[in-house]
Image (cartoon, rainbow, N blue to C red; front, side, top):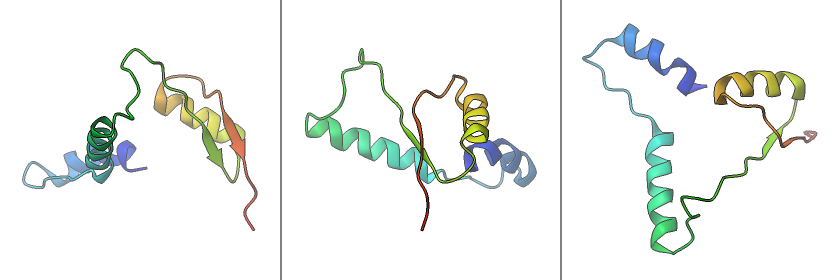
Length: 81
């Protein structure tokens, strides 16, 4: 949920506070490691996204589409417990 709150937090906390997004840093490290191991996808290759949810799948699709700006194709519901 952090990416959705990041602009609000930055505005409320002001310029004196530096927000650190661990997801962005993790993505950079993973991309570097995949490239070093020659496992990175080609830049021309279109990615496939798969989402796994444990609850309200229609709601997840609706919110996910707004967040990502595109319709979610592969959403799987898995029961917990």
